[in-house]
Length: 326
Ligand code: HPA
Ligand code: ZN
Image (tube, helix red, strand yellow):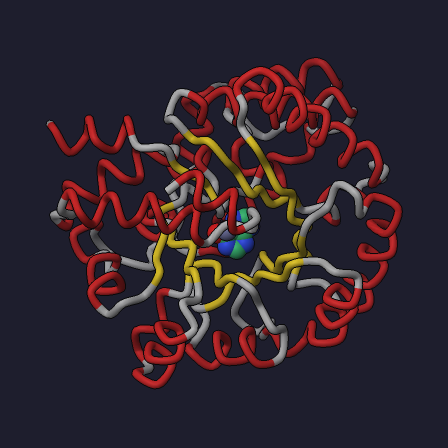
């Protein structure tokens, strides 16, 4: 359709993407073989069967198994390059990607191995395709704040390549307030701050992310819609929300894509964006998220253009760089 053609041709930024969540089954098998790592799947078919999630935790349990095949700097390079090559086809011009260092350092992989592999691919993609990027280190919220501090310390000598910190993994029971001090320390280091909040967690977690973590951008934020005061504040502050429709569907945040609140968010004046989250696990990269959401909830041409513009407005590019993309 003409809306699909519009989606495909619009320049876009992706602001909510976990690099480890872009590990496609084929590359997982290749790296498992290359590194002599056992994985609990024999075929791509097995993998697709296992990717039938009932909740965020159900997904995370498999996500942490998948990333065990990532060992060498070349592995992190290949993972990142495969993602960038894929979204180049979707006319993505800028990315702000997450990585989960604790998922690797806790397995004995050096922090530098992870960062050097990722950044060599980010550099190569800029050279090859002109795709610009920012890199965001996420703290795993099911681990302690002390462990997050240790991770921030490891990042200290790589701050020329790390632009921000985020907060991901199991949301329920791990409120933003648990990470107040480490986010304050990251702010002092000049890092941008984002946090997953309101994906499964209550509106109170979003209030905490705003007030205690002083976030610059909100990841997901779906459950803000339960709290009118919060909606008003997010609109007033023009807080960018990185919404992930196919993720929401696959993690049972919504029952049907037709029920997705994205249109409501836009109509309430919220600065929503469309993102893929963990495309290898949730069945679609950014354009597929746009197309399926547009079809399911009837996004208009104007709404699609607004969403693409919001992706640049919500980025951590300089104002003049943002302007050049609008
Ligand atoms: N939510 C929380 N943590 C995550 C996700 C997610 O969607 N993907 C990878 N880590
Ligand atoms: Zn996420």
